[in-house]
Every structure is written in structure tokens, then in C-alpha cells.
Image (cartoon, rainbow, N blue to C red; front, side):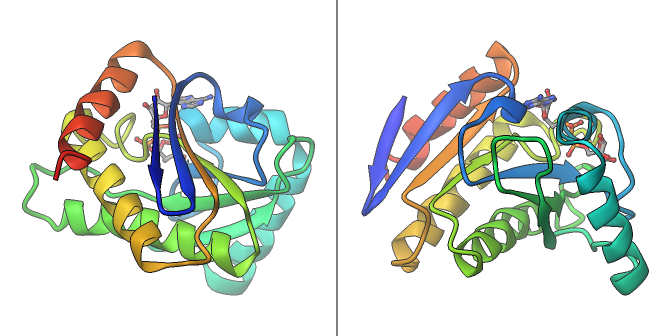
Length: 183
Ligand code: APR
């Protein structure tokens, strides 16, 4: 399902983000930037050592990446040129600024995309796996934040994809899309 916001096509796709034919893919990383499971493991396996080497350099230089922030590395063997690593919040019940931190992940990732002249970017569903953020809530935050960013930034990427791994996640994002774009 596609939606157009100003110059940007917003696409919801079910699939594997490592296969995305875009300029940059976003990784749901951890603060240490040390490879984990889920989408992080899949991206690092497919991208090879270039990603780990660049993450190691950021660890040495900056100590990692705080929750709600993002860093950018090359994408090694992937089609994409860059991986933008962002650190989502761990769900703790909803009263620990989880929504603000999750929104910040999407804003900071898109800010880095613009800085690096990225025209097309693909996001996974950040925080809704190991970090336990309820997907129907996360989907509303994700789509609202992306919509607002595009409305406020003329240099936003012209293609923004959400690549959702399973059908349940895709359904949550489609439902959220109906709500967010009905406003
Ligand atoms: N493509 C797209 N989405 C994927 C893929 C893939 N190849 N593999 C997994 N996913 C989906 C999951 O199904 C889930 O919907 O990504 C979403 C996010 O799940 P996680 O990868 O567990 O990310 P998150 O909840 O943010 O947890 C981050 O997990 O892997 C570790 O190092 C990572 O510690 C960090 C934590």
C-alpha cells in the first residue's frame, strides 16, 4: 500500500530488509552497536565485515549510540550504500518516554539520510521485536513521525519504505496508516 506525502512515496512492504533496493536501510541496533539477533543479525550477516568494522570505529570514537539516536555506516555487500543504525527504546509499559524515544529514532534516521543525500530509505519496525514495543502502538508512532518529517523537510527522501517481516506486523502498519492518514 502506497501513500504520497508531498514529494515522497511511502510504501508498506512485507519482506526482508536486507534485500531492499534503496540507498540506505535502517537497522534496529543496540547502544553498544554490537551485533545482535533479529534484523540487526540479518543485516550484519548479509552486509559482511565492512559494517562491523565501521561500528567498531564508532564504538572507539563515541562509545556507541544512545537510545533515540542514530549513526551511519557503509553497507558492505548489501545493495544499499549505507546502513543507518538507530537504537529503539525497550518497552517498559509506556511511561518511560518510549514513544518520544521511538519518534526520535525515525527523526534522527531521516535527518542522517538527508545529510547524506539519501533519496530512498527502508525502515524495519524498530523496537517491536526483542525490545517488546507493542507493534500496533509502534506503528502509529512510526508513521506519524515519518509523515511529519516529510511535511516539514523539502529535502526528505523521495521514497520511504517500511519493510515488515511478517504478516501480523504488516497488518498493524496498514491499520495505523488508515488512522494516521485519515487525519
Ligand atoms: N527484515 C525486516 N524486518 C526484520 C528482519 C528482516 N530481515 N528480521 C527481523 N525483522 C523484524 C522483526 O520481526 C521485528 O518486527 O524487525 C522487527 C524488529 O525486531 P528486532 O530485530 O528484534 O529489533 P528491536 O526490537 O528493535 O530490538 C533490538 O535486538 O537484534 C537485537 O542488536 C539488536 O539488541 C538489539 C535489539
